[in-house]
Image (cartoon, rainbow, N blue to C red; front, side):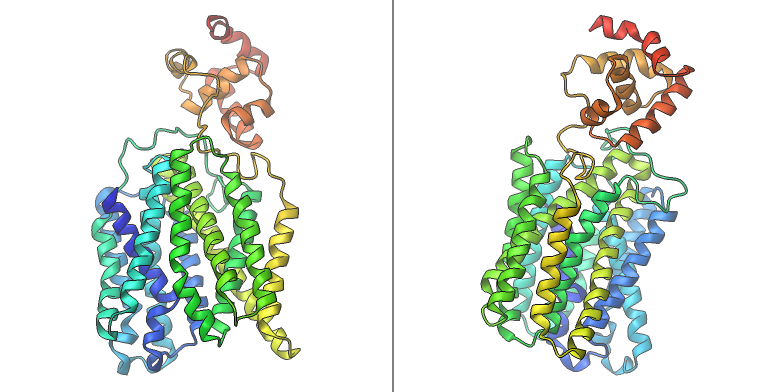
Length: 465
């Protein structure tokens, strides 16, 4: 787990140092062919496109091909820094755009593989690994910022290779949660992410883009300096969230975004009131809020990937990351439009973007109820039936003979106990649509015509309890 934290931390640090926060490019201002905002937009677009194609066409990966993809991803990531390595050869826009495309392709491959790797860990350990990786990434960013330009560049160049060398495929026996989350054919949908959960992700990452636009468009050196100084708060919040999930297994994960949302709202409110001249309080709130929600979203994506099984985990990871990337891109385009409108109307940019962030968070709070299905009742602590262990042996010995999957067997047993669909949703933390899909499969595999016949056929199980 220590090596995994180091590998993921190296990949995360590369993202922060390059296109996500642009620390490296600030050191080489004379070589920038593209505006940092345009470079970020292009990188995010290519990143999202790669994720979309991955979700559609890649369902499984063998160990050897995946290792080769990791190394190729590191090589392509380094291509994004070619304009800094060979400045005389990249004086026009087209070659720079091509290097951004290659960098996005490689960085996406590495990130998807690492998220796939996370799905082998139980949720608590996954959360702690994420927090540890973010702490290491913050330390690397701080350390590199003290270095001279050339060592800074070459060490950043080596980070993807470190991440690739430390990566290994998830263990084959790590996916023990069955086939509870079937994907929607032909694969372009967002299953197993419910629409409401996807919108919740989108609302948070839209505001992330707004904050990113504020940082890139601000001319305040104090704001930029404060963001770098408080980077450690993001990692500290992420690490604390990981510890909470690991050592307080009864925690309702919905509380994580309930804590993050007001923190972000207060951050935008204080930024609106105090302006960029006094940024410490709002920026600190942003760092903590995004640290909490970032860990929540990554853990949820990895957990859902684990529940889908090894063959489908890569596709689930890509779908989850695509929701994030598409939200960030939509937010970036929205803020670009907002910046243009504010400049035409001669409005102050900082208050306009801050109000937009507050409005998005407020609407997100009004739009979604905190029910199990939405957020998304994929409770990490409850992957099976709540009422104790004696049923599991019966499930295995009596129902598996009918070719039912483990999750279908659980559903069948709850039907035998005369539970309603709503009660099954709560017991297994799945959506109503998933329950109906399981029931169709159960009826087909057991050769029964409906609920009553299934209850009659397996009534001995209920009696034996």
